[in-house]
Length: 240
Length: 182
Ligand SMILES: Nc1ncnc2c1ncn2[C@@H]1O[C@H](COP(=O)(O)OP(=O)(O)OP(=O)(O)O)[C@@H](O)[C@H]1O
Ligand SMILES: [Mg+2]
Image 1: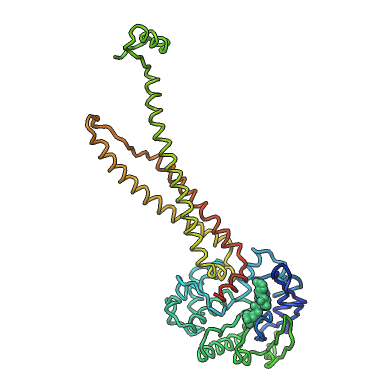
Image 2: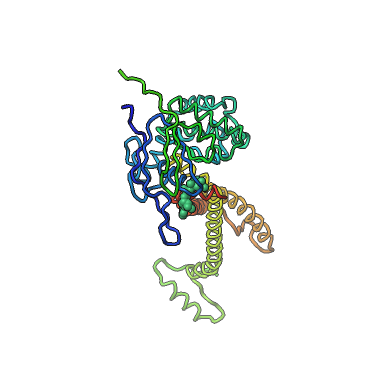
């Protein structure tokens, strides 16, 4: 992989919603490149189109126009089956409200995407345990979501997002439902993930989360108004 | 009085001759007698058919409603599953299976209840004076039970169709957004 190979490349992305018959653009001609190993925080006033953009980047929504390449693949033109497959193996999602399956244990929640990707049982059980240990929940693998605190549930959600080793981790307000201390722990987890090589894009109102990211993008009215790299990527390891 | 005819004889004509010979006698061929009983019974059959159809329709609507409610309740969950890459078919399968399981449970309970009720009614009706001892009003026919079960399974699958379709054609982003507001 060349050092500047972008994981994500968006060109003139637009997304319009029909409101009372008239199109309203939530994302209006946005271009963005994210390199492997980056951690980007997208901030901006409520309603400026952050979630809309993140949904486009995660292939759960389709742009009205524009080009979106993730790992060189044209996400905007994918059909439903292909997009679903792409989300399964290429993207990890963390939501504000955790959204774990309430009837499954922590380990089963983490195994769910792996089972869908037809990972053999023994492999996925081992990986689920490993991931839960990584996020600090090694002793809670058999707990159901209702037996876990909000911060713990969000950790399980992070482990689930990483299950199929996605190229990109997307998180919409991952600390939005957490108190200050648990939020800090979550930020520390994202930091560790990023240092270990995960490319992350988070949308957030959380000033501390934005401060911790390597790069902060400010949005307003559906476009990027400011883009600052606060902590450059470590020099790429030389390949022989 | 039973009258036997030679094979090939015109039974109806013989009957008319007998009736003509004595006005106090009415002649009924075995065939006509069977037809007569059959007509009386067909009334009950029609009634049973109408009752069965109404129950089936009610059951169908009930299962559709139950599955729809259960899908609506988990619509956020379903959107999340779709978002993390669970295929449409798996969700369709799961929703349809739910309808099927509900229907089969209903069918088994219904069959049990039906058997008990039939036996009870049979007991009451058979106690009527003057009936032959071996006379049964209700009889359990395995083939009819199998046919009904097949019909119910078909209905169970059909009942899941609409909620399953709803569950998989939802807009993922929109549903997640609505869930976040709720
Ligand atoms: N499904 C929709 N139909 C109509 N309008 C929508 C829809 N989804 C979003 N919008 C509009 O698009 C704009 C951007 O919404 P979006 O959710 O992306 O904002 P956001 O930056 O994530 O806001 P917040 O910080 O409050 O989460 C808003 O004006 C919103 O009302
Ligand atoms: Mg948002």
